[in-house]
Image (cartoon, rainbow, N blue to C red; front, side):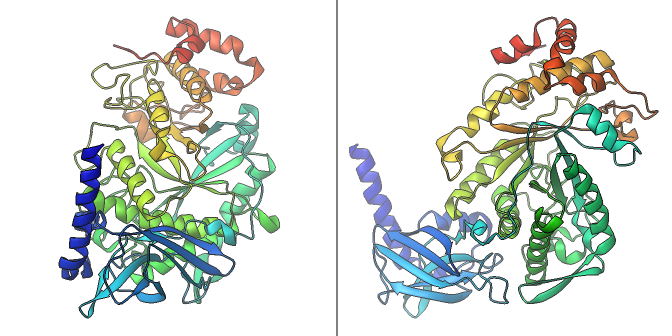
Length: 539
């Protein structure tokens, strides 16, 4: 206890010294890891930034009031601005507790919805930042298009929309959810004008009509829709982060959170999608939104040239909050997810980040800058991807501890337990929603192993109340994946319906017993007992 008190005293002393002696340093824009270090020594804490009516109310506390002219100055920065460089939007008497109030100015050129707020004081004729950054955390207070969620069960898949009978086939399978992709570049075009924050944006009417027709049919069937937003080569330059526009050939790029025009365009896309697919006024409904794909896979799906984890996560969070605020300000019931792969503590690609490290940094940054109700989208594929046995993975690649190299369905409980930690809980104190938004099993080494793996994986997912979706990837094989021994479809390329199809049709129903018995005979032990034991058997 004495050591703790001494530590607190020294920390407070260092805090005060930093504010006074380090004024010049703190006043500068400090990117990347330097900004992170600087944020550790801020004597003022922004406790909340909430929409209240047509106002934003920011509340702060301070253990030691920093020296200045007797006032706290609240800056409203754009997401690409660091330090006290934006506009002073409100002031309050400097004190241990302070309250700022100012207009939200929603959907105007001066909107504060996506801005970040910092407290500064005046010292020696300059500004000194004395708080961390903080964002608005309740955009749902604005939502006028909120509809009840359609989600009723976890069984879902990625549909093959080229199949003439895709909807009838889904009805036979009894899928309750589908996941689909939207490259935001496909929205580029004309035909739909949308005014947001005082500026008119044009969206591709044909693309929107195609997605409308698709989603309305799924909605009509009572199927919940999850949409993954991708930033690929089809995106216009202003939606790609300027650092990623260096000629690198990847499948996905970081969203533009570094330039004024790009940030405004991104916010308009988010608001348009949130409103248009809210389900209100006869529109189609999207319940769940995944922002990017496997964002820790930097050189594959969310490209930025920097290899600094803090910089990459910070850039992603800025985009995540823009989409979160834009969508939730239209539809309060929408769920917004990040997206991580199964490479928990081992990289298969040196250009990527470990998903555990990325998750830890993402959560820490969100907590520091204003906790929101984000969800975790995770892809617990077998490792290697072409391994056909979900119930018995390679011992060299995974185990039953948090130090495991990979997280698959066999040790998925490690991730669930990890998300139960107090620092990972949602603002309401509950465990965050976990969506298995992509998972598949290969039949390249026999349909029996695919059958057993699917039974095991689904039953494992269904055993966790924290899991809201099990999205099987995919309905039909893809040639490029088959070439890599990843024949994951329920259908083969020639139209052959695999044994896994008949299994998936009954999973989650009272008729599943015989199919699970068949899976148990393939595995060599009762699949439900194996799931309940949470045992990790390796080979």
